Figure: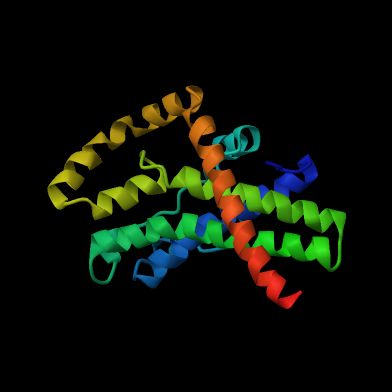
Length: 208
């Protein structure tokens, strides 16, 4: 896994977390909740989304978080629980899309017009976006995966699960220091990278 030189990692990190939070806000706004827009969070300005600790963790450990976009599901049109699932899934979803686009560009840069700087940036973008997506899909509060799981569980189980949210941050810290994420997250990220590479190589093989 390659995360790039420091000067490459910074823009890659900012792009990954900015699009992640923007996607949450954009989806919520689309569903009828203008909270993020009213608070100035419906923007691609990375300074509005930075969480210092989460950014440091992403820099040092390869996974982390940004400042959560405010969402009020009571403003959603239609089913509130389904709306929260869509909002939660939109962040990791856009990260996987960005990873796929960046990996495609990486292949193009290596075959058609090689540029070391652009190649390294694309490579870092791929890994940071894949890792950020997987990390946030873990069903431990306050990560996106917990909101997705809460939204698809039967209501009575969802209520019980939400009561466990107060212990989520402690469980998250324990899992990080126990090395569980390193043993599970990084191999899974490699598998996703391999799958994306296979799909892209087949696609480019038709046109190049």
